[in-house]
Image (tube, rainbow, N blue to C red; front, top):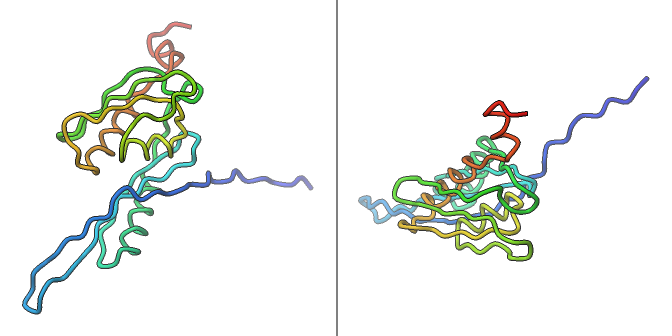
Length: 161
């Protein structure tokens, strides 16, 4: 009898981008709740982000992690960089991503760096334009990564073989 092998689910690593505390004023004082933004990825192009809210930090991170696993995307890469220059926009946030020469590293800040690192991109130049809100910057980075196309995909779309 032949042995059946099941495809393993990719192992996702997680990083917390930001944790925010929110206060609600009630009769007895202040009630605090927390919001966590988590990015996860397998280092081979699959990444996702999630936002979680709860009264405890650990619960907020767990909820965000679950949300990140549910909405993951695949990033097109050329080697260890991106195929072409792109701009992602979400709200007031605007993120510019440019391919870089081998050995450059990830030249990016904050949330953009975490997203690109989780996607397995090693050489890229990035600049966050306009907003510095971490949630919108992460969403704009995802928008930029969704817009990436390889040469083969463009040729296939144009009907060139």
